[in-house]
Structure formats: C-alpha cells, structure tokens
Image 1 (tube, rainbow, N blue to C red):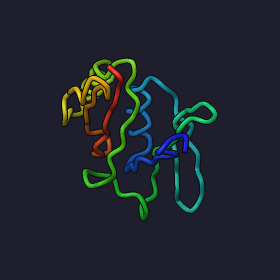
Image 2: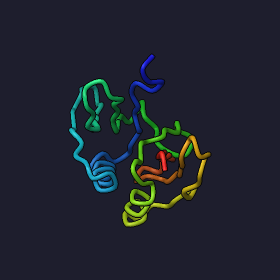
Image 3: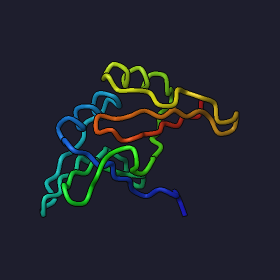
Image 4: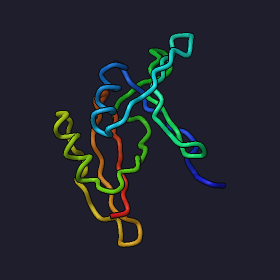
Length: 124
C-alpha cells in the first residue's frame, strides 16, 4: 500500500465561497466539475500517483460541519504561512500549531469557510 489515504472529499454548502477560500489559503486553482445528479466537485490539483481530493456539494449527501471527518492536509514547508492565510480569510484556528514529536512534525486545526474542521500537518 503506497498511501493510507487515496482520496478525500470535503463537504461544502456554498461551492464558490469554499473554492475562493481554499484557492486563497493554499495558493492553488481548483477545477470545478458538474458531475450530475446535483453533485458539484472542485478538484484539488495533484500529480499523477499523488493523493487527490475535492470539495463536494450535494444537498442530500454531503453535510458539512464540526461532526464531519477530520482530514490532515500537507502544510509543508510551513504551517505558520497557511495559518496566517487562514486568519486573513477570517477563519478561526481551533488548535494552534503544536509539535507532535521530533519525528512526526507539527499539526494544527482550523475551521474552513463551510464550518468543517480541517487539520494541517508538516514535517517542521
């Protein structure tokens, strides 16, 4: 098994708002796709063989909020830079940057534009 995580989906209520938030915070461009049956996805860029994921909006299937799954997104080389952009976007930091251990790096948790808890991990 190459990676334990093969794909992730972050539920959203407002796709445009969530797309704007994630593009600003991570400095990337998401590809929006209307999949059909009321499902809209905004795909995170990923190199071939890398773990991929998407923002997902479907009123009957995805329900964002604090009780949703907690995923860890790669914040290398610096959690601090991403947390600064989260603050600039007006979103709260739920768990400030903290060291997990010297061999496991650091983590933090913030609340995104859709009220999901999103964790960050870096090697620093």
